[in-house]
Figure 1 (cartoon, each protein chain N blue to C red):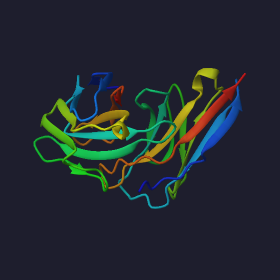
Figure 2: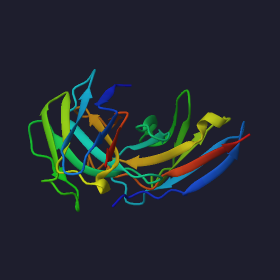
Figure 3: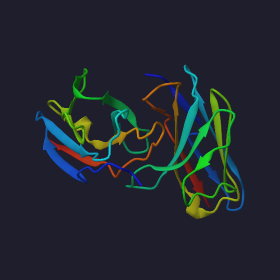
Figure 4: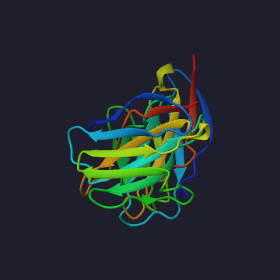
Amino acid sequence: GAVVSQHPSRVICKSGTSVKIECRSLDFQATTMFWYRQFPKQSLMLMATSNEGSKATYEQGVEKDKFLINHASLTLSTLTVTSAHPEDSSFYICSGKGVESYEQYFGPGTRLTVT
Amino acid sequence: LAKTTQPISMDSYEGQEVNITCSHNNIATNDYITWYQQFPSQGPRFIIQGYKTKVTNEVASLFIPADRKSSTLSLPRVSLSDTAVYYCLVDYNNNDMRFGAGTRLTVKP
């Protein structure tokens, strides 16, 4: 299957600061990318869907001004958590889908800890 | 909200066959059914995908009845390393990627 990478794999930041997470499709063009958040022992919660070159579509309850998503190219999407707070500590996972594809490929996830 | 329902947990023993059923009553004509496996602190991993009848690959089989309102993932001869959470995902209207609660499978020796 296709490969999606995330960077960093782990990040610790202080409360009030911002942190950026990168998601890259390494061997395919991801026309659509998805961002998920997962708390311990819970399922993945879809945060937003982004299409290359367009504004992301956020799920209900997800603050678009807090979780900034940029999908500037067919191989890169970024999620920036602005003014992070301890409750934003979570496992963030991205995935990508190609054109006319029913399969999404997931990244390995990024563990964010806000102190 | 997710449109799939699965058992919360299942237990099995090494060497047994495990069948996990997912309900998706509102599946649309063009939707595919995909199953993923997730280990702790890792991203989900693709297992198998199907549209109707039966699909088999080197790790699993997927059975889908004619009405497509459910699907069953079959794992032959599970091992301890198959202990994980398994998710059923139905692609509603293309790109409606909401996960259900998943099934936590525990394989015992």
